[in-house]
Length: 588
Image (cartoon, rainbow, N blue to C red; front, side, top):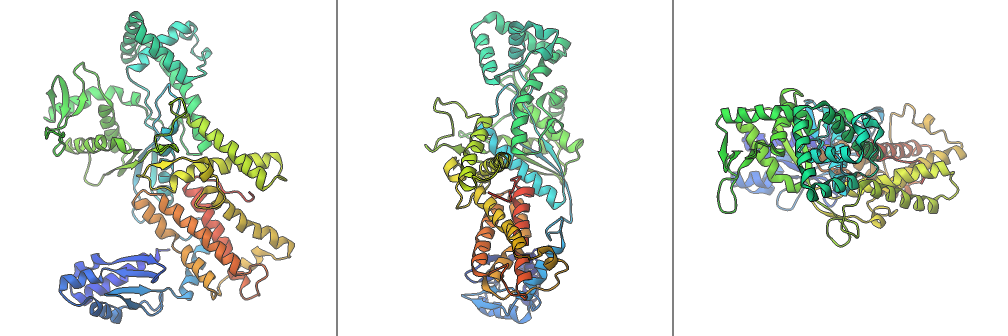
């Protein structure tokens, strides 16, 4: 089902072009939803009138004379200096609701007509370090974008660019050899219980002991040369780290696993050749001993050209080099049409220079799009980056565990009669859902204050409120059984709807906008468009449910109202579960 707004804009654009005799006038048409003026309000007539030096209201009148929307809207109205207000017909709303109902797998939304191969780079933890709250936004935002892109019909390739290479591994390998010498013969016999402490201990020894620092440097050489003993210990450190971060991914239900990983180590043997290629093309030049690319348009505060360093003066490669190799791999070997990087806003300049360098090198064909999706910081209630009282980063695992524990308290208060297993399952869905939803419902480019009390509230724009709204709709099915109402029988083969009450029409108008909202959310990479829609849907359903009896409705109205309930539940379940990865529950 094509979004209504697209159908309206196409028809209005054709008429505006015809009336003005200017084909490019169609580009001026923008239609917005605004309940103050009708279901939709057409803008652009005034811009066209200004270009033609004519009266905008008179131009709007000419457009209406030529415009045929009789199958969709009531008679258009002109407001103000030249706005055109449109209100959908109940018959059209009924037709669209029936189309949605008939599509049991795709909720009435067409797949894209131009599917692409989309690579999404997100999460990206560092090996030998615990995932902390700073990894939250990239991990769940990246997952939501992947889910929406897949739903739209694109081929999505998830890439977790883990930090599993570099000089720090020499230090870690040397430390393990000294403290657990049995690792040389039996790597699997050594378990790293606390990654953070392991890393701190190795760093402290490296800083305090020159001989140990020399051993660490030698292990870096061994690693780069492929020494089997060093490689085995390195693999063990990576595997041990995965034992710590994979449960976090599983808890968040973000569909990341070892198959999605392609760490820095994967590109290690490509970096020297990449730099040579840049040098051969005259792009990488020596500056203060380092090899640098100077893409046009990037300058320092002093007006000097900014370098994109691809090799240090000591011969070492950098994140920039690895990121170039990864970008090249994704285009050449993964055959990406579109690459999306999900990282915090502090990396904005890095990715701008990365993209510019790759295009200068001729590695990015014209049809390939590169996008950097940025986000703000998770703050504590003191409006500073969220940390423990001692000033350390909060481990993501601990934060999620606390969310589930707090949600369990909410479940105990709401439904103490549930069995323990059911309470545990609901608490997990509510707690994890609350953390994810609180992030999604904020503009991704903004910082936001993390508050368990706010995100676990049963009212307001929160996951518990949305999950409760879903459970409330599903409770109608349980009540129906007690009233001998067979919902499936009444909905089976339903071919006509009776939309007459204002609350019915209001809910229907909102339901048919779902596809439009998904398209807008993906166009701007902003899940908060989707959460806003779902929250408004829950509010409109509440208004409908309070105004319109469902199970006790007369025989003419009940099937329509049951269908509105069913489509509301399906839309919430789809938006939360399929697109945002937040589980719905049938009881709270």
